[in-house]
Length: 343
Ligand code: ADP
Ligand code: MG
Image (cartoon, rainbow, N blue to C red):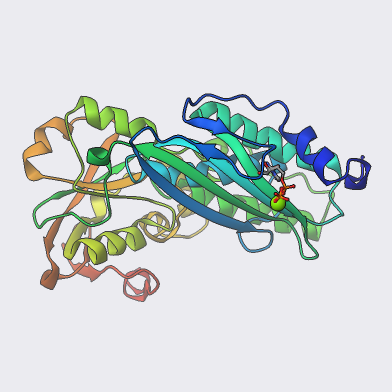
């Protein structure tokens, strides 16, 4: 293992970033100068940043460093996708404890490089410093987009349809399995982790993807969402954000919430309510958006999309319509008491 001191700060950055290539003509000046320069060519510049702290957002006991680098980029790209914009550049801030060898950083950068390639974004800069309390990564993503394409959280109108991509709850169930096996390992390091058969949900947790494909699909269908957000904190919380910004309420149908069969069976195995995992689990990085009712026919049979509810007047509030009973349960980002007590 190579100590970081063997490279020195500048040598280390050079070593970690020398194999990155550039995909975007908007990248004018990148790593090596005092600041990066991008040329937006008349487009809107969309900016987002996220901090990931060891022990708060990830546990290196079971998260491989390469996956961590990949996921850190993906979560930022997902925020750009949620604005219906095209991700183009990222900056990477790292605070590293000196217990990390160079090889560990190489792993993180291998993950970052993979994500840059997959999403066609350029690494144009960052900052590197030491940390006395674990690894901290801060990624900033830049996107460019024509002004008319940008979609905000505000803009949903009563009667708009509420649509979600993919399926939900998987990332949360993957986390439950990783945590279960990690505590088994801590109790007895000779025990083999039992991860077999959980591939899909583990991948949802460890190697999520951002739905940059949706922008193109919606364009082909000639749909511009009236509002949009990415599902990073759980469906319930994201619905409340759209409600808050758009000044409408939402009715969400429990039976419509899309979930993979492995998510459902794992939730049942762990005595969790599967729908609750989708509603408050988070980290699925799907897109949640609203469309005008006139666009219903364009989307109704599309495999990427599920209509999960609709917008109502703000005074009607935000509710989950329970399967079978049609009982109205208030949607609440934190308090799932009403829902939990029902079981
Ligand atoms: P300054 O002293 O001007 O802040 P730095 O020495 O921090 O410059 O960085 C030198 C160059 O390397 C800059 O272009 C910066 O954006 C880039 N850089 C620094 N750290 C990283 C990193 N972790 N990943 C990618 N690029 C980095
Ligand atoms: Mg610096």
